[in-house]
Length: 378
Image (tube, rainbow, N blue to C red; front, top):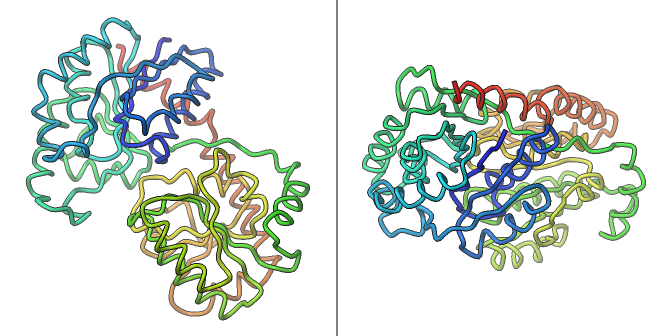
């Protein structure tokens, strides 16, 4: 099958964009021909370069929703741009078009282009929370525009979690074309973990008896990186042998680095093409985001056999995480007891890995999408 993967091109380092690379790899391994269509904006260069390892890359003069002053309104009214893009896709003659959107209002012109192309198509939406829920400015108007565009699009709509699918159903009304397909990640070879762990901890100057807690993500408000620092200070006060590493960068880097330096127990490393070595070196993965779709960072931590420490606001949205595989970092002291006991951490990590194998592998994700592609073609 010839599959055209279309990126709304919000940024090549966001999890929703990296997901396209992971999906392409798994589809290619299953014998499909994959092509990436993305904006020619420089922020998409990294994803485009990585994608060339698995398929063809087409770059186009496309402007992402958030590069327009009027956001979704400009995207929704971009009739000429949608027609031009549809013509580009027609020339590629795919069997199916798969549009990848970050949220409800993102890439509305791409949905129109998919309809105009006349090819079978589906659309994945990573964040299905409304603009009102996200407390965005002019939320009522932005939600109205997004709803109208999504109702006009006739293809299957895919969310990355059952909870996100329910959000979308509430937004559009009960709708039989809404599906949930969980993201997939590489199942790391845990046989390599002991050697990699020893080497990376030595590189980071982490002693064998120290507890290492790692986070992965962009330093942007959504990820709440300063909440991470608040928790690091709180945990370190209870468990002085704990060290913290954040993997990633972003707009808040300078301010974050200054505060981290004052704490002394926290350090940051820049963006990494692969985070497996840091996850293997860690004892716990800490995630503090305000909201998410289905973050690849958490799934990769599960794959690495790490217990995930999650703030209660996010834990409530991730029902696959519970007391058997994760730690709720909130009020009270129960979390400190778990963090301080290696045997309990190891048991949580073992269950986390089993969850990744059962629900979040590349093959599981690709097989679900194959079914949807075939349904869209009927």
